[in-house]
Image (cartoon, rainbow, N blue to C red; front, top):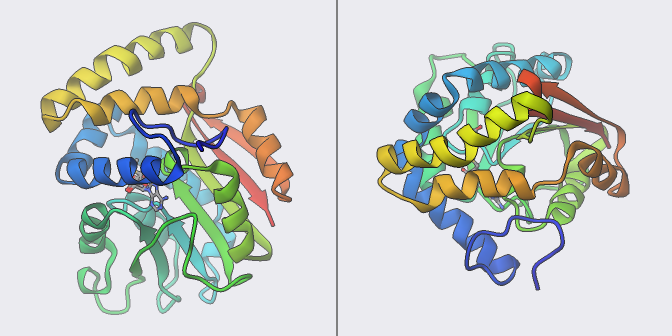
Length: 253
Ligand SMILES: C[S@@+](CC[C@H](N)C(=O)[O-])C[C@H]1O[C@@H](n2cnc3c(N)ncnc32)[C@H](O)[C@@H]1O
């Protein structure tokens, strides 16, 4: 059975097939992912990652803080988090279930890619819905443009709640669909221009048609906040970025 809230890639009939379709899609586009991202967003994504990391500067500045970047992909959110870690800090955990995405990420944030003493991240091949981590062990979980792809949003929120310490923080950076004129212009770009460019650079039709569909299916900010509250998070909030094209959900366990 498909959950009421979760990614629904074309052809998927249940949670397992939805997760498999998402993983295979990211494995396939991994070699072109960074290039596409920067072309399609005109590098605005860099500002979003940095801004999201700045929101958590206090916890990131604590060398003992246990931090997870879930759905880290090729690691640009992880790199923004690392910029705010002091020298000698505990490594950030960077997890993803697509080996092709994660291995590209590890080339940027892994210990071998960093100067001696520089903060680094440990790659972890894992499913966000079944994290191989102890309950109550993390101070911060961040996810950038990954949460929308989970096969079951409630299950994702529950799993993050399980592994966070009491008082631990959650940050979910996601696209959204702005209203008004900006929304209309953006919808044309997102639904028509973006899939065409994606097809051109990637040679794959599916992935960048899936993107606007998945954003359209994703709960609106007030619904997402209701899901977070129902999953027993506190101080749930949403901060729109760039006219509400994207935004950061924040909460505490
Ligand atoms: C759009 S990319 C975002 C990557 C990166 N965070 C960024 O901001 O560029 C989404 C990533 O989420 C990963 N992902 C999707 N569902 C996942 C799951 N259930 N468990 C782990 N990773 C998942 C995909 O493999 C992909 O690498």
